[in-house]
Amino acid sequence: MADENIINSSIAVEEKKYSTLNLGPTHPATHGIFQNVLTVDGELIVHSEPTIGYIHRAFEKLAERRPFYQITPLTDRMNYCSSPINNIGWHMTVEKLIGAEIPKRVQYLRVIIMELARISDHLICNTVIAVDTGALTGFVYLFQFRELIYEIYEEICGARLTTNIGRIGGFERDFPDKAWVKLEKFLKEYPEALKEFENLVKRNRIFMDRTIGAGGISPERALNYSFSGPNLRAAGVDYDVRVMNPYSSYEDFDFIIPIGLNGDTYDRFMVRQEEMWESMKIIRQAVDKLPDGPYFSPNVPDFYLPPKEDVYNNMEALIYHFKIVMGETDVPKGEVYHCVEGGNGELGFYLISDGGRTPFRLHFRRPCYIYYQAYAEMVKGANISDAILTLSSMNVIAGELDA
Amino acid sequence: MDKTYQEQVISIIREKFESDILSVETPYDFLTINFKKENIIDLIRYLYDHSVAKFQYLTTLCGIHYPDARQIAVMYQLHSLVNNWRIRIKIYLPEDNAVTPTLTTLYSGANWMERETYDFFGVKFTGHPDLRRILNVEDMIIFPMRKEYPLEDQTREDKQDFMFGR
Image 1: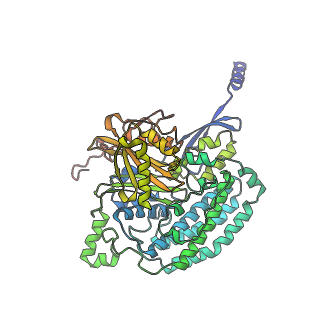
Image 2: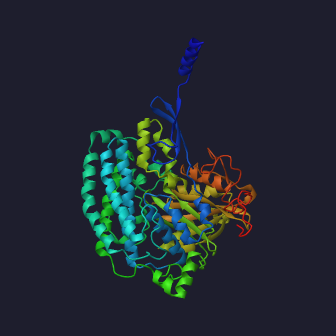
Image 3: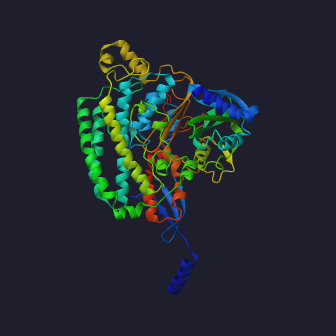
């Protein structure tokens, strides 16, 4: 009996050329809940079948029942590594719909916040690439600066991860002094730490051997797959929404768009790394050139919540407060698309309003969702270890993937 | 400049598809073309290959349900990266027979966008290589983004609230 089993199993091994391996849904290296069913030939990936939707929360459906302010927390939970960009992108979409003029100061403050968010997004992604190649130190070392960024958010809006930052028409309050102190601290200390991290990793033989040539994609394929953001730029296409369709006064700042050549893991890493330096430059310029003026737009009283003191002491303000929170203000009918350069690429909001208190339809163009479908093609023929690196260097955020 | 780009794109389209254009709008300076559903793939292929227009980037694709007209619209948003032109093309399909050819032949990126549209609106894209549900569970029998499905399941019996209603 035992002999028979051995014989059977040995035959089975010979016949079975490929084996199936589940990468995920919960695997420490996938950084989020999504599954890949890999067909492997030894170490090489023959075929990969991604399954997503594990944390699908029906944001587009939920948004059809919510007034505009209540949609902001939903956008937080998409790309939670850079939620301020999502919040501000959504607020700008509504502002476009209602035709609000935004003061210069607000636009500059928004640029500062969005670039901080971009840094925190890229910081996590890049240090995690290093972790996946075995270098944990950089991750732990740079994490304190993400903490500092979160403290800056905290000073401004009170929240850290899911920020719900800003209002339609501006900010809830002007940046407090503490926020500026912390921002200066960040601008002073972060470059040194980032430089150290770069020195650790950039020319490191092990890191280069692991990443160069792994998970590459050609610019033609990347465009055909509608890539955007750092992943597209790593392939050599200089498409950046901040430059192509400037919003929030990005045209006032001097910065370059770094691009890669091969679209591989190393290029994606380097593009993100350079973008952090560029973001630092933008923040510096925005802080130096920050104009005076109001921190909110005075001409959208129907959407910008009145000051808290007035709400407590003044009946009109109280009425307005409730009206706005419950979404009882009139919105124009219309169809509007607004996109911002999110941490991962073109984050678009397609909003159709029928004049009601909630959107008739709201569609999020989520960069992750769109470029993750190329993963199967990118890892075909690669090693399993390369597939892990490709995944982390594409910066697939489960929240944004599944909406 | 903006006006000229919209006129330019429209004239490019009119050269070949004059009779298929239902209407043209520019809400918030964004060129929107309502198009007949039959020739949509030909139109997009034409814009893709056109020597000037070069709409070679599919920004997004989504469904919209218009319950009053009993129609489901499919919105294609294209971007010409060379010229930085963006257009939106909408086709309208009948609610009970929402079938349209796939765009995956032209853009690989349309694959999951179409799967999402199928998943939520039930639009069948003929010729799609792998038209399955993507974000919802596979045994779901409805298309949840259609307007007839309210946010909460109205047939639920475990949660009854006679006093305040739902």
